Amino acid sequence: MSLPKPIEPVEGSQKPGRIVAIDVLRSIALIAMASYHFTWDLEFFGYTDPGLTAFGWWKFYARCIASTFLFLVGVSLFLAHGRGIRWPGFWKRFAMVAAAAIAISVVTRFATPDSFIFFGILHQIALASLLGLLFLRLPALLTLLVAAAVIALPFYFRSTAFDHPALWWVGLSATNPRSNDYVPLFPWFGAVLVGLGVAKLAASSGALARLGHVTPGRWANPLVFIGRHSLAFYLIHQPVLIGCVWLFSQIMPAPVVPKETEFLKACQVSCEQQRDAKFCKSYCGCMLDSLQGEAGLDKLYGNDQTAEFKAHLSELASACTASTEDSLNQGGTQ
Image (tube, rainbow, N blue to C red):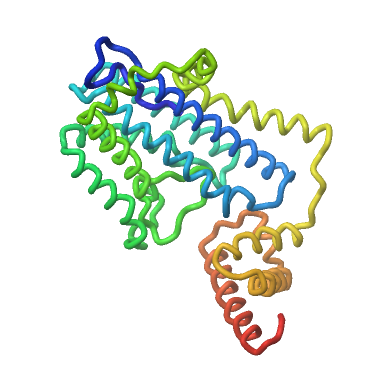
């Protein structure tokens, strides 16, 4: 993940230099990201239960990683440009991140067309770096208030007016589009503003100057190296990991799971994020029976993305929800 890298501490340092602790923190986030992607790769090749990384603890883990990266974007933006925007360096780094984001979109469009990355973490970093410049001179508390508003808005306002693909990057559509890495402007730009606001407060309190004098031992050298070459690590690690899992799959393939079993597992995991296990077992059984009765399971696993099929799935979900609730209220099972 390429983040705007600090040139020098803004206040309190005797000489220009990087804040090594930030490089270490960025590196830890990168390693955490790699562990999440490795688990996703195992799921993709069938070695774990379907939906494992999309729900529960793994979903929370992924959001913490993304939040950390974007928080560091804000911190690093202030460290690099807090005294004045260094346009040549800014545009060079912006061009690198934007080019990498475009490359990822192109590659994933061919590799996973039904869930390609059209606005992922790198796209967000590129846009946030531009928008963040507008907040460099604003007071820290005002920046943090705007951050809170940006984070809160999607929880209180969504509209079908943003459902057009050209507006998906905003993050206010009625339903989230399908993507392997979706990091829209709202709410994720808020994490960047939090980092920017915290960096301002840390600079005014002298905390940045003190942090700049923290020098980890030699044990941290590998972490510092990764943190200073974050874009290269981000672009390289996933092809390496997925390549390793693919090679392993050629030697020891994952067991073939019938579509019916896979659907029930994925449905159960998804459903239990909102309802209890008893309800979900009955509800998922209803959905499976309905889809099998009309050959809908083949369409589902064939990645049918038509509006008609999506509307039909919604109707089936509503019908099965009502049927399951009626059955459970009567004390029976479906």
